[in-house]
Length: 69
Image 1 (cartoon, rainbow, N blue to C red):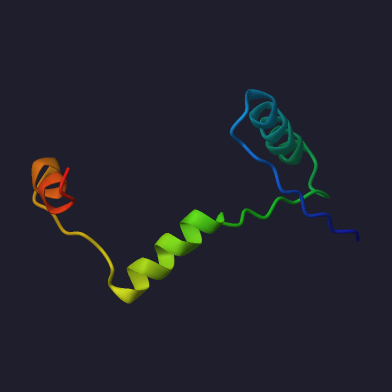
Image 2: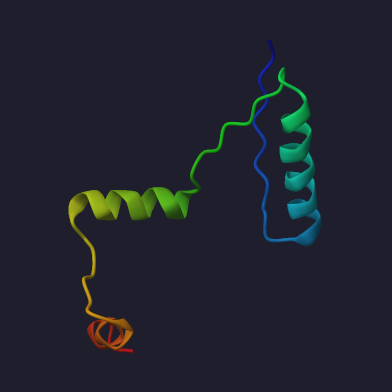
């Protein structure tokens, strides 16, 4: 079996259409599998959470106050 890694910038409509095509194709073809991996921003957020670097707020106003917004 061959493996391919694609890095797709999903910020454009064409890229999103391609991703949608791949996901739809996989539904009908058991010999193809997609493994989703989190992007760098998500990985950083997960690490921050694991370190306890999180905000706790009662509501949106409280959060904005904590963030000085």
